Length: 287
Ligand SMILES: NC(=O)c1ccc[n+]([C@@H]2O[C@H](COP(=O)([O-])OP(=O)(O)OC[C@H]3O[C@@H](n4cnc5c(N)ncnc54)[C@H](OP(=O)(O)O)[C@@H]3O)[C@@H](O)[C@H]2O)c1
Image (cartoon, rainbow, N blue to C red; front, side, top):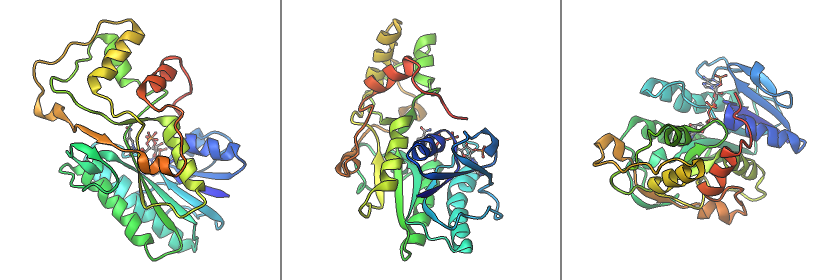
């Protein structure tokens, strides 16, 4: 099959490498395509511009994995809401009708929701990042509703993996502080996120419109920090006396039951296996 990956960065490249290794043609759109590996056909494309390149006529699957340049409303709107819209415009313009279009979204759409969360849970984000991600999801789902292209939204938890060593660095430097109030966190290893996209791209049945992409363990942040401290032979991080409101963050347990029900299995079902692989230097972060 031919797969177009729009916004082909770290995650998109890992998806592309896996698909190319499986014998598929992969076209990667980004502003700096020269950094892409040889098995991905890089094409210069700026999703914030209306002048997108030609979509290969035989495109079977589109994956939109663009990331915003900055953490502000304008950057989020340009990358996600406008980006999704412009990719769909390009498909229409070129008469391409892929079988499936997958948008990489985020659990930020659940805002401050706490407790158990799945694909049927309310999405009421109070902050701009979740609101704009949700708006981009709706652009995909609504515009493809009456077409032959199946829309799929994959809401990823926090991605960690090769080169994504924020928590490791904090523990190593002694700056890590466990939150005063226990807080559940949801994450996925970059390679499992890529594998989930490849899996959803090839699913032989009509997929659900939305999947959560998180591992099996909505672990307490303090437990992850303590685990890393043990692995790194560093002192246990202290517990904060109190949490500033902006540091509080959500405290929820996202379920991957729907993704697992499709037959997907994780290489790194919890942070323990995943961080051990990162600490062992397995894999690289793609530019
Ligand atoms: N990080 C997390 O914890 C997390 C959590 C949940 C979901 N996600 C989502 O996961 C997805 C993939 O993230 P990632 O880590 O792979 O990000 P990444 O490595 O930064 O890749 C995103 C790519 O998008 C490209 N891009 C940005 N603006 C563009 C534009 N205007 N036109 C074309 N391409 C553009 C960039 O390449 P150029 O600069 O060459 O254009 C970049 O390589 C994103 O949708 C992100 O929101 C991330």
